[in-house]
Length: 187
Image 1 (tube, rainbow, N blue to C red):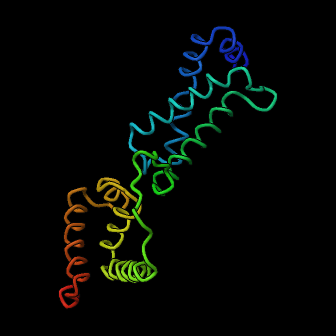
Image 2 (cartoon, rainbow, N blue to C red):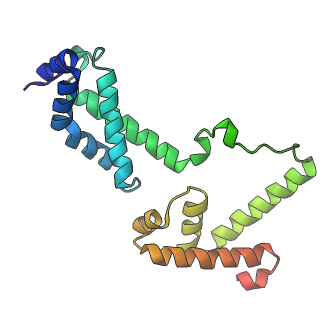
Image 3 (spheres, rainbow, N blue to C red):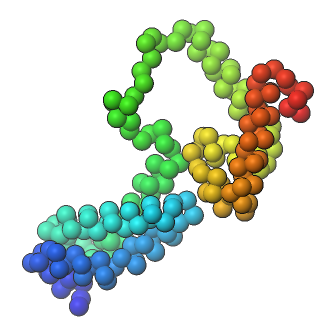
């Protein structure tokens, strides 16, 4: 069955058409997503993104224009967009919207003095993390600034999940001593 025939089937009989399209292109979508984000996303995340792609194909069945490109091109483009969006959410979790009912709002804005102290504390902490050296500083940054799991960090650094966990715990202990003023215990 050609891609044009698949698109016609998708429009005429959406349920049968989407099954045919999924059967023909799910491997292509998954491969595209894995190529872009395979080392970062969990298998269940990839599966969910593939499902999202075909949900969008189903919803867009009436507006897909074969003259602008093939059905395969449309699916590849959707797959790339879904993978890119997932990577952005993964790397920058702060930009993920928080439902208003879950947001914790301060009773009052901090004073300028408090903001200066917080800024100095943050800078001191970042310097201390950097001073841990590789791979400990990388582990701490990836875990607490990028929200990566121990398994993801281990995969990136060629370490076991258990080794990453232990190094992170030791690094946190060093940082705690340093931030409490026991700077000699840090070195």
